[in-house]
Image 1: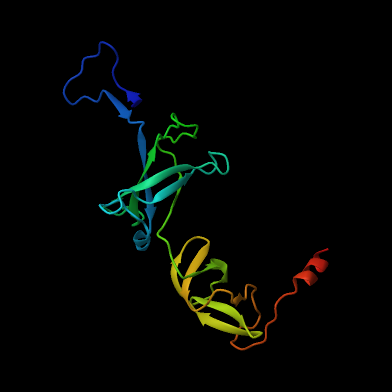
Image 2: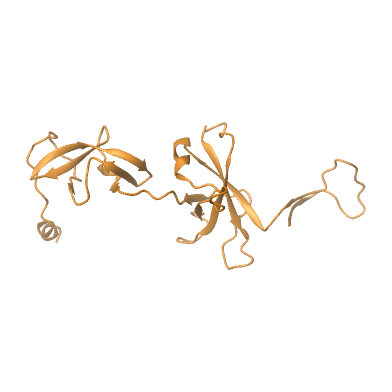
Length: 201
C-alpha cells in the first residue's frame, strides 16, 4: 500500500475510532466511468460464462504523451445512477496503476481520464461517418446519377460513426456534400477528383 496521509507520529496516543492514516492499495486502481444507460447492453460484464469483462483503453489527454495508453478491464456495473448526470456508472480495474512492474505512465488518485471500452461485435452493418446522417436518420445516396433519400436504421452510434443495418448497402455511393436543393430524383454527379486536384494547384 501507499500512504496518502498520516495523522499521528511516533509516541502519539490514539483511541478507538481515531483516524490514523489513509492508505491506498497499489496492486490495482478502480476507475468509475459514466455512460448513457442505453449503451450498457453493448458492454461485456464478467459473469459465470465470461469471467473477464470487456477490455478498456485508458488515455490521459494533456497529461500523458500522445498515443500513450494503459489497459484495463470492466469489472462491474455500479447499481446506482450518478445523482447529478443520471448516467450509468461502470467500474474499470487497472492493474499495476503506478507502473512499477512495467514501464508505464502512472495513474494518480483523482486524475480525470478517458476510457474507451471495447463493445460487443456488430455484424452485417455499414459504418458511416455521423456527418453524413441527415435530418430524420436519412442518408443521401447517388443512385443512377439521381439523388435518393433513404431512411436508415442505426443499430449503434458513437462520437464518430453510425452503424447501419437497414437502408443502405455496402458499395453504394453516399452524397457527402451539402446540396442547395434536396429532393428525391434530382440529378447529381460525382465530383471529378482530377479536376479538383488541378484547381487546387
